[in-house]
Image: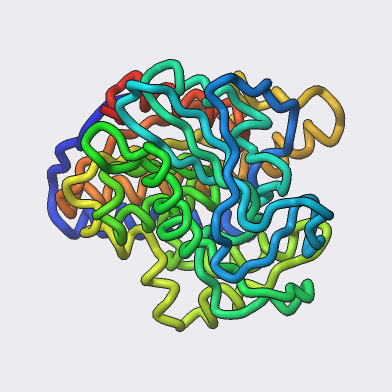
Length: 346
């Protein structure tokens, strides 16, 4: 692992060939889909914990499954769970992945990163948004009869920021950090690049940071068809493949917006490692780790490497972390602590 940019030598032609090679490999692997890890046991709350309900930008309240109406006495708005401590120097917003759940963020269910609150960093976890890429969609997904349009970019950049500001989360130098995993990784980079007034650092962990690369639109389309219990229609997100909204929501196409920020990217290499079987030794766990987790992480590895090279060529230094591992929570937890230990939040 290293911090900062590598020096690249050689002719521009050689750089272009390397980029094309990486993106071609991403295309070849991309057809397997894009998912995040499954849920485990949630850690206990702490006295520093508080839950908020924030404006949903027109989305309804759904808490335990697709389109379920709120129960009697339940508050309106998107659920946000936070951990804050007086004197902390930074606040980080953590975005979930493709299979985000409705009760708790996967970060809380599967990792210990809430303990950052005792290491100087406040933690904020929006809940919900499976398959959303934390974007403002063009229309409701018609494949699963979604009765509303996702407006997650509005929620993160308007409702959430206003709530955090009003409750003392804007600390230190006055700007936030944002990190995302898998489908939330590229979203974290893009949100930061387009909202520099609120963010000064962004991280993508096993992310898909070049969504317009050859084959990626098809890979994302297929991954959304694999969402249980109902598939999502990717055309409802940014429109057809030729729509300019794909580029405007692509982290690579927003690279100049990241100039001057701290940027962190991380990925496994698709080879089974120390955390690959954290979910247990059942046949389903083995299937998810070997037959899904490995190719998924190889795809994110090629995307992460290509993005890091592209960023460096454009004068955006990147902190990076690469491990032997697959697409699972243990590695993402390690990356968060690696980022913290290397000064990402400072």
